[in-house]
Length: 245
Image 1 (cartoon, rainbow, N blue to C red):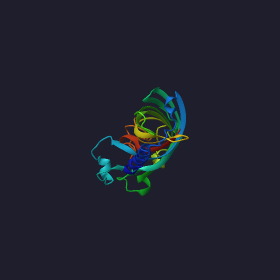
Image 2 (image 1 turned 180 degrees about the vertical axis):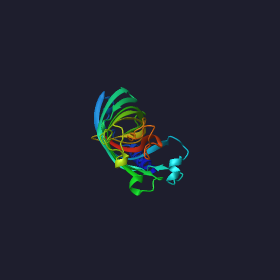
Image 3 (image 1 turned 90 degrees about the vertical axis):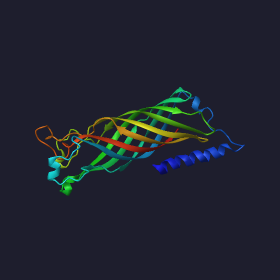
Image 4 (image 1 turned 120 degrees about the horizontal axis):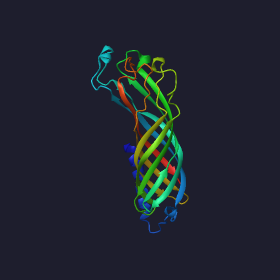
């Protein structure tokens, strides 16, 4: 994350130094006067799951399997994103954005209290159709740069959820919910180039709802080693987006 912030800072510094030149040319002078404009983005992301337990104390069932202090781990997985941008000007410093796109990421979930290696790891390969609606707040333009912050909510459709699968963890299938919601917050900078506007940004994206689908036997009378201990399972990630307008 520090490298990403440094990357954005270097861009800002370079263009700020250009602004000091007496022969400086202001690019795309009428760009911000448009009511509506379009663009596209590509990017990378680093995602993990936040695990909240039904009982924060280690259960008797966990102890049966020799549970360590950390019962379930979810390391970061790396993925990519691509999509389109529609931007509506509300005010000279405020824009409403729609950023529909695809996000793909693979993650592992480690159950440290299950001794059998095959049963102790579950892999999730997720491909989301994300439709964020964001409010972008910008500073006044300074020569050819314009920093901004943005935030909003997103509807996320998981094509790889397997929510309706007849198999569950007893057959090695970790099922996720198909329909999800998240919120995101971010910072970025618009860089006005002669032929287009380049806009790198960094975002934090956090799921609002529980994304896990419980196993079929997880009904209060029978228990599942994989889903019974978990109260909620939510995605959280850092997204780097490179936008072009």
